[in-house]
Image (tube, rainbow, N blue to C red; front, side, top):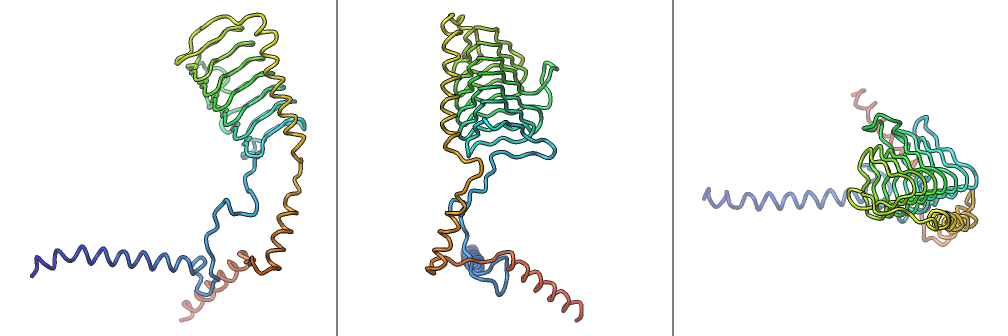
Length: 280
Protein backbone atom coordinates (compact mmCIF):
# COMPACT_ATOMS: atom_id res chain seq x y z
CA UNK A 1 0.00 0.00 0.00
CA UNK A 2 2.76 2.43 0.92
CA UNK A 3 4.72 1.56 -2.24
CA UNK A 4 1.65 2.26 -4.39
CA UNK A 5 1.11 5.61 -2.64
CA UNK A 6 4.76 6.54 -3.14
CA UNK A 7 4.41 5.92 -6.89
CA UNK A 8 1.30 8.11 -7.11
CA UNK A 9 2.85 11.01 -5.15
CA UNK A 10 4.99 12.44 -8.03
CA UNK A 11 2.01 12.28 -10.40
CA UNK A 12 -0.22 14.15 -7.98
CA UNK A 13 2.51 16.73 -7.36
CA UNK A 14 2.91 17.34 -11.11
CA UNK A 15 -0.84 17.80 -11.52
CA UNK A 16 -0.89 20.36 -8.69
CA UNK A 17 2.00 22.27 -10.29
CA UNK A 18 0.20 22.38 -13.64
CA UNK A 19 -2.97 23.67 -11.99
CA UNK A 20 -0.97 26.34 -10.14
CA UNK A 21 0.71 27.49 -13.37
CA UNK A 22 -2.66 27.74 -15.14
CA UNK A 23 -4.05 29.76 -12.24
CA UNK A 24 -1.05 32.11 -12.22
CA UNK A 25 -1.33 32.71 -15.97
CA UNK A 26 -5.06 33.41 -15.71
CA UNK A 27 -4.55 35.87 -12.85
CA UNK A 28 -1.69 37.54 -14.72
CA UNK A 29 -3.96 38.09 -17.71
CA UNK A 30 -6.75 39.60 -15.58
CA UNK A 31 -5.01 41.84 -13.07
CA UNK A 32 -2.82 44.83 -13.79
CA UNK A 33 0.09 44.97 -11.33
CA UNK A 34 -2.02 42.73 -9.02
CA UNK A 35 -4.72 45.37 -8.78
CA UNK A 36 -7.97 43.80 -7.53
CA UNK A 37 -10.12 46.31 -9.43
CA UNK A 38 -7.77 46.95 -12.33
CA UNK A 39 -8.78 46.71 -15.99
CA UNK A 40 -8.10 43.69 -18.12
CA UNK A 41 -4.77 44.48 -19.79
CA UNK A 42 -3.00 42.27 -22.29
CA UNK A 43 0.72 42.30 -22.96
CA UNK A 44 1.77 44.53 -25.86
CA UNK A 45 4.81 43.50 -27.85
CA UNK A 46 7.41 46.13 -28.68
CA UNK A 47 6.72 45.78 -32.42
CA UNK A 48 3.09 46.76 -31.75
CA UNK A 49 3.98 49.99 -29.94
CA UNK A 50 2.80 53.26 -31.45
CA UNK A 51 6.25 54.81 -31.32
CA UNK A 52 9.76 53.47 -31.72
CA UNK A 53 11.42 54.38 -28.44
CA UNK A 54 14.99 53.79 -29.59
CA UNK A 55 17.21 56.86 -29.50
CA UNK A 56 20.03 56.76 -31.99
CA UNK A 57 22.12 59.58 -30.45
CA UNK A 58 22.33 60.06 -26.69
CA UNK A 59 24.80 60.91 -23.95
CA UNK A 60 26.20 58.72 -21.18
CA UNK A 61 26.48 60.65 -17.92
CA UNK A 62 28.70 63.64 -18.80
CA UNK A 63 29.86 62.18 -22.14
CA UNK A 64 27.93 63.68 -25.02
CA UNK A 65 28.37 63.03 -28.78
CA UNK A 66 29.41 65.89 -31.04
CA UNK A 67 28.28 66.01 -34.66
CA UNK A 68 27.64 68.80 -37.23
CA UNK A 69 24.47 69.18 -39.26
CA UNK A 70 25.82 67.51 -42.41
CA UNK A 71 26.38 64.14 -40.73
CA UNK A 72 24.12 61.21 -41.62
CA UNK A 73 23.19 58.89 -38.75
CA UNK A 74 20.75 56.14 -39.72
CA UNK A 75 17.58 55.88 -37.62
CA UNK A 76 18.57 52.50 -36.18
CA UNK A 77 22.26 53.28 -35.66
CA UNK A 78 23.52 54.03 -32.15
CA UNK A 79 25.95 56.81 -31.24
CA UNK A 80 26.48 57.31 -27.53
CA UNK A 81 29.03 58.68 -25.12
CA UNK A 82 32.29 60.46 -25.92
CA UNK A 83 32.05 60.40 -29.73
CA UNK A 84 33.24 63.18 -32.06
CA UNK A 85 31.93 62.99 -35.63
CA UNK A 86 33.27 65.47 -38.16
CA UNK A 87 31.76 66.99 -41.28
CA UNK A 88 30.36 64.78 -44.02
CA UNK A 89 30.76 61.55 -42.06
CA UNK A 90 28.07 58.89 -42.27
CA UNK A 91 26.94 56.07 -40.00
CA UNK A 92 24.78 53.54 -41.78
CA UNK A 93 22.02 51.25 -40.61
CA UNK A 94 22.62 49.16 -37.51
CA UNK A 95 26.12 50.51 -36.84
CA UNK A 96 27.20 51.22 -33.25
CA UNK A 97 29.67 53.84 -32.00
CA UNK A 98 29.94 53.38 -28.24
CA UNK A 99 32.15 55.87 -26.43
CA UNK A 100 31.53 54.66 -22.89
CA UNK A 101 35.06 53.75 -21.74
CA UNK A 102 37.11 56.05 -23.95
CA UNK A 103 36.93 58.52 -26.81
CA UNK A 104 35.96 57.81 -30.43
CA UNK A 105 36.78 60.16 -33.31
CA UNK A 106 35.37 59.77 -36.84
CA UNK A 107 37.00 62.03 -39.41
CA UNK A 108 35.65 64.03 -42.33
CA UNK A 109 33.78 62.06 -45.01
CA UNK A 110 34.46 58.78 -43.24
CA UNK A 111 31.84 56.05 -43.43
CA UNK A 112 30.82 53.33 -40.98
CA UNK A 113 28.71 50.84 -42.89
CA UNK A 114 25.92 48.52 -41.79
CA UNK A 115 26.26 46.76 -38.41
CA UNK A 116 29.87 47.72 -37.86
CA UNK A 117 30.86 48.26 -34.22
CA UNK A 118 33.37 50.84 -32.98
CA UNK A 119 34.20 51.13 -29.30
CA UNK A 120 37.20 51.65 -27.02
CA UNK A 121 38.88 50.16 -23.96
CA UNK A 122 40.22 51.93 -20.90
CA UNK A 123 43.83 51.01 -21.73
CA UNK A 124 45.84 49.23 -24.45
CA UNK A 125 48.91 46.94 -24.23
CA UNK A 126 51.17 49.55 -25.84
CA UNK A 127 50.46 52.08 -23.11
CA UNK A 128 49.48 54.69 -25.70
CA UNK A 129 46.19 56.51 -26.00
CA UNK A 130 43.34 53.97 -25.85
CA UNK A 131 40.94 56.13 -27.86
CA UNK A 132 39.65 54.90 -31.22
CA UNK A 133 40.80 57.46 -33.79
CA UNK A 134 39.60 57.23 -37.40
CA UNK A 135 40.96 59.69 -39.95
CA UNK A 136 39.41 61.37 -42.97
CA UNK A 137 37.87 59.42 -45.88
CA UNK A 138 38.06 56.08 -44.10
CA UNK A 139 35.59 53.34 -45.05
CA UNK A 140 34.65 50.78 -42.40
CA UNK A 141 32.78 48.03 -44.20
CA UNK A 142 29.82 46.01 -42.80
CA UNK A 143 30.21 43.91 -39.63
CA UNK A 144 33.73 45.16 -38.92
CA UNK A 145 34.77 45.62 -35.28
CA UNK A 146 37.25 48.31 -34.20
CA UNK A 147 38.41 48.60 -30.59
CA UNK A 148 40.94 51.13 -29.28
CA UNK A 149 42.82 51.33 -32.58
CA UNK A 150 43.95 54.05 -34.97
CA UNK A 151 43.06 54.17 -38.66
CA UNK A 152 44.64 56.97 -40.66
CA UNK A 153 43.22 58.80 -43.68
CA UNK A 154 42.03 57.17 -46.93
CA UNK A 155 42.01 53.60 -45.66
CA UNK A 156 39.54 50.74 -46.06
CA UNK A 157 38.70 48.22 -43.34
CA UNK A 158 37.20 45.15 -44.98
CA UNK A 159 33.90 43.55 -44.06
CA UNK A 160 33.88 41.37 -40.91
CA UNK A 161 37.41 42.39 -40.03
CA UNK A 162 38.56 42.93 -36.45
CA UNK A 163 41.09 45.53 -35.34
CA UNK A 164 42.27 44.77 -31.81
CA UNK A 165 43.57 47.11 -29.11
CA UNK A 166 46.57 49.21 -30.05
CA UNK A 167 46.49 48.32 -33.77
CA UNK A 168 47.57 51.06 -36.18
CA UNK A 169 46.55 51.23 -39.85
CA UNK A 170 48.52 53.97 -41.58
CA UNK A 171 47.16 56.13 -44.39
CA UNK A 172 46.17 54.75 -47.82
CA UNK A 173 46.08 51.13 -46.65
CA UNK A 174 43.55 48.31 -47.03
CA UNK A 175 42.66 45.53 -44.61
CA UNK A 176 41.10 42.64 -46.54
CA UNK A 177 37.69 41.27 -45.48
CA UNK A 178 37.54 38.65 -42.69
CA UNK A 179 40.94 39.70 -41.36
CA UNK A 180 42.07 40.01 -37.74
CA UNK A 181 44.69 42.63 -36.91
CA UNK A 182 46.28 41.55 -33.58
CA UNK A 183 46.89 43.96 -30.70
CA UNK A 184 49.68 46.51 -31.22
CA UNK A 185 50.15 45.46 -34.89
CA UNK A 186 51.17 48.27 -37.27
CA UNK A 187 50.21 48.24 -40.95
CA UNK A 188 52.47 50.58 -42.97
CA UNK A 189 51.13 53.11 -45.46
CA UNK A 190 50.18 51.96 -48.95
CA UNK A 191 49.92 48.23 -48.23
CA UNK A 192 47.27 45.50 -48.43
CA UNK A 193 47.06 43.17 -45.44
CA UNK A 194 44.77 40.21 -44.82
CA UNK A 195 44.28 36.94 -43.00
CA UNK A 196 44.02 35.78 -39.40
CA UNK A 197 46.33 37.06 -38.08
CA UNK A 198 46.71 39.77 -40.72
CA UNK A 199 49.88 39.58 -42.81
CA UNK A 200 51.39 41.61 -45.62
CA UNK A 201 50.03 40.68 -49.08
CA UNK A 202 51.29 43.33 -51.49
CA UNK A 203 51.86 47.01 -52.09
CA UNK A 204 48.97 49.08 -53.43
CA UNK A 205 49.32 50.38 -56.97
CA UNK A 206 49.45 54.08 -57.75
CA UNK A 207 45.98 53.85 -59.30
CA UNK A 208 44.57 52.32 -56.12
CA UNK A 209 46.13 54.99 -53.92
CA UNK A 210 45.20 57.93 -56.16
CA UNK A 211 41.76 56.91 -57.45
CA UNK A 212 40.20 53.84 -55.86
CA UNK A 213 40.42 54.92 -52.22
CA UNK A 214 38.97 58.34 -53.05
CA UNK A 215 36.24 56.87 -55.24
CA UNK A 216 35.08 54.52 -52.48
CA UNK A 217 34.91 57.32 -49.92
CA UNK A 218 33.08 59.66 -52.33
CA UNK A 219 30.61 56.93 -53.33
CA UNK A 220 29.45 56.32 -49.77
CA UNK A 221 29.43 60.04 -49.02
CA UNK A 222 27.08 60.68 -51.96
CA UNK A 223 24.89 57.75 -50.91
CA UNK A 224 24.67 59.07 -47.35
CA UNK A 225 23.82 62.55 -48.64
CA UNK A 226 20.87 61.08 -50.53
CA UNK A 227 19.64 59.32 -47.37
CA UNK A 228 20.09 62.48 -45.29
CA UNK A 229 17.98 64.57 -47.66
CA UNK A 230 15.11 62.12 -47.25
CA UNK A 231 15.29 62.30 -43.47
CA UNK A 232 13.70 65.10 -41.42
CA UNK A 233 15.76 66.65 -38.66
CA UNK A 234 12.65 66.68 -36.48
CA UNK A 235 10.16 64.06 -37.61
CA UNK A 236 6.42 64.73 -37.97
CA UNK A 237 5.30 61.11 -38.19
CA UNK A 238 3.79 61.38 -34.70
CA UNK A 239 1.00 63.54 -36.14
CA UNK A 240 -0.13 60.73 -38.44
CA UNK A 241 0.10 58.27 -35.56
CA UNK A 242 -2.07 60.44 -33.32
CA UNK A 243 -4.63 60.96 -36.10
CA UNK A 244 -4.82 57.23 -36.76
CA UNK A 245 -5.16 56.40 -33.08
CA UNK A 246 -7.96 58.96 -32.66
CA UNK A 247 -9.73 57.41 -35.65
CA UNK A 248 -9.58 53.98 -34.01
CA UNK A 249 -10.87 55.42 -30.74
CA UNK A 250 -13.81 57.05 -32.52
CA UNK A 251 -14.65 53.76 -34.24
CA UNK A 252 -14.51 51.88 -30.96
CA UNK A 253 -11.64 49.66 -32.12
CA UNK A 254 -9.08 51.01 -29.67
CA UNK A 255 -9.43 51.72 -25.96
CA UNK A 256 -7.05 54.16 -24.34
CA UNK A 257 -6.06 53.24 -20.78
CA UNK A 258 -4.37 55.86 -18.63
CA UNK A 259 -1.76 53.68 -16.96
CA UNK A 260 -0.33 56.56 -14.94
CA UNK A 261 -3.72 57.27 -13.35
CA UNK A 262 -4.23 53.55 -12.79
CA UNK A 263 -0.92 53.29 -10.91
CA UNK A 264 -1.81 56.36 -8.83
CA UNK A 265 -5.15 54.86 -7.81
CA UNK A 266 -3.44 51.59 -6.93
CA UNK A 267 -0.95 53.43 -4.72
CA UNK A 268 -3.79 55.19 -2.89
CA UNK A 269 -5.49 51.85 -2.39
CA UNK A 270 -2.33 50.27 -0.97
CA UNK A 271 -1.83 53.23 1.38
CA UNK A 272 -5.43 52.94 2.60
CA UNK A 273 -4.97 49.22 3.26
CA UNK A 274 -1.75 49.90 5.18
CA UNK A 275 -3.50 52.53 7.32
CA UNK A 276 -6.30 50.08 8.10
CA UNK A 277 -3.78 47.49 9.24
CA UNK A 278 -2.08 50.02 11.49
CA UNK A 279 -5.41 51.14 12.93
CA UNK A 280 -6.46 47.58 13.69
